[in-house]
Length: 344
Image (cartoon, rainbow, N blue to C red; front, side, top):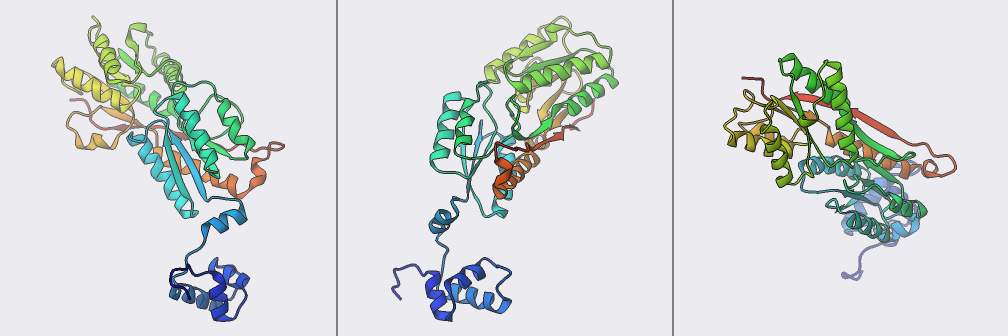
């Protein structure tokens, strides 16, 4: 045998005097092949340092055994945790994961999707960027029969597969806990107004106030584009009010971090003079002295894992993706308030 040439299943078959189809089935643990034959095939394959030719397998099965994942920002703890859930599930299916980040840039999102398509990914898992409300670019993937599953940031369109988190349960719990501690002026620092998650938070905030017989005060609601400068401005606006809020619910943990820093600049004691509750429960809180009173857990690992589970169910049963009779899989986790620090 030429030492520079990669061994093939033909060589294994020749060594054992069996057919190449028998070798192929044995390598894939096909039930039609006996245990002894399977063990002999794998032993010879190991002796020859045989490695599967994935290009040939991909060509034959019309698959690349790769899925694409598109997220707003890979550096955020929330999304890195979600990726762990996706990769763990994909690994069990012997699939590779190709990742891209939109950085909340609509044009970049479109370009990455096009790149994923040309790389012939078998399916896509997507968390959409916060500045886009036109999702026609996903129709391009349908034309090539590439299934898409959304998670976390899910577009407001019907007939899609998704895994998401119900923000209502955790936020209502947060407002109820604050009211039970005698706090009746609760502020909200929301994200960009056009963002679906911002609209959801606003609606739930209204509902929580109403359920606790609290009057709505528009001065207690600030918005941020989620940049550090905008976060700080929103916090300072609230702290400058004559009726300064005793508690602030923030769009995410990074906003809470900026809020805590500004509050300390104003010589306010966290969890005594002012309380913060944030989405989505960063791991770093356990290492910090000044933490928010609580965080609303959105279970990113479970969201990512479930999105992968849905995607692979579509890949393994192509009939589910047929336009003539689609069955849309939609799974929602309940958010949960996690208390970090009780009031001093």
